View 1 (spheres, rainbow, N blue to C red):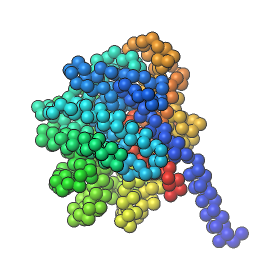
View 2 (tube, rainbow, N blue to C red):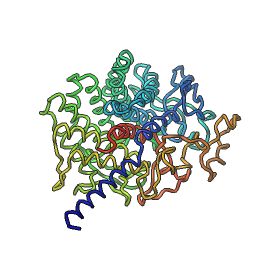
View 3 (spheres, rainbow, N blue to C red):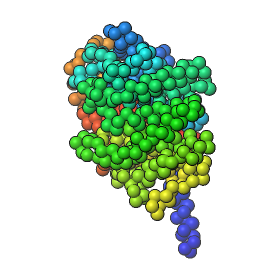
Length: 502
C-alpha cells in the first residue's frame, strides 16, 4: 500500500471514529431530559401536567406568615431552600438558551418556556412589594441538618428580603437580568406577559442600581457560605443592563454597560474551599461572576447594532476568555482531567463545564458570522474549534469518558444511582404516605441502595480530576445536581440536536 493510500485509509478511519462518536449520543433525548429535570425541582402547587409524578405539592405557605405570596419557584439543588440568586441565574441561562437555540429545540421549546415561566411567575411575586426584593425562603441551616422530602419539610420557611436600607444589588440585578431575558423569549408567544416581565425588570434594575450594596452584608448570616457573592455586585448590574439593552435596544442601557465595564477589569482573588484562587475577571462566569458572559453577550449586541466603536474591551476580553479555556492555548487557566473534562476550582465542577461550554458555543456563532479568528499567542482558533470544544464537554457528560458513564440521570445505560437529593433518595408519598420527619430520612441518606426515585435529566457535580466517580450520596460535591448545571446545558443540547455532526 502506497503512502497516499495509507494516508487516505487513516483519514477514512478517523472520519469513521468521528461518525461513531457523534452517533453514540442522542442529543434530542438528552435535551428532553435536561428540561424535564426542572419539573423535579419545582416548589409549590404542581400542575396537572407534571411529568415527574413522584414529586408532589410542597411549601404551599411560603411567605404567608408576612402576608406575601412566595409560593413557587425552584429548589436550587438537593435541598429544600429557595435561594433566589442562583435561581435567577439559572432562569437567565434558560432564557439565553432559548433565545440563541430555541429554533433547534423542536417540541421541547414549549417545555423550556414552561420551565422559564415557573421561575418568572415566582420572581414576579418576589418583587411585588416596591422597595423590597426577596432573596431567600427557608432556613438553610435547619434545612441542611435534615434529610426530608420537600413535601414533608417542617423546618422554618422564613422569607428574607433586601431593601433600600439593606441592599442586595447582586440578587436584584440577577433577577432583573432573568426577567429581561425571559421577556425576549415570551415576546413572540405572549406579548402581554413579556411586557409585564420587562416592566418589572426595569423597576428592579433601577432599585438595584440606586440602592447599591451586597447582600453578603445584608443577609450574610443566612446566604453565606451557601451562596456568598465573592465577585462583588458590579457585574450583576452590568449583566442586568446588558439584558435590558438586548430586550429594549434603548441607548441608556447600552451606555450604562459601556460606562461601567471598567469596574469589571479587576483581578479576582477568592478563597474557595480553603484554596486561594486568582484569575482575570474576564475568565469568570457562573451564578457568582458574570464577567465572561457579559463580554460574549455585549460583543454580539454591539456588532449587531453596528456600534463597533464601543467594542473595546468586550471583544478583546471575550477572546482572552476563550484563550483561557482552549487546551492548546499558552494562556490556559483551567485544568483538564486525563479524559478531557474541564475543571475549575470550587465544588460542583459541572457548573463550570456547562457554563463555559455554553459561552464557547455562543461566541462561535459570532466568530462565524464575523468571519473572525482568535489568536492565543501563536495558536489560532476559528469558530469550528470552539464548537468542537463545546461538543467534547457535552459528550463527556453524556458518556464519552473513561468510565463510559453518563453523568445525566436517566440518560444512557450507566448513570449515577445515589445522587445527593432529598426527594430522589426518599420514598415518594405514593410509597410511604406517612410523614417522615427531620431525622427520619437519615436511614435513607446512609443507605447504599440506589435512590428509589429517578430525577431524570439531573446532571450531578461530576467526577474528580482523575475521572473517578464514587456514586456516593454523602459526596455531595460530586453527586449533587443543581439547576445552574442544567440551564446552560439546555442550550448546548438544543444546538447539537440539530447539528449532530457540525
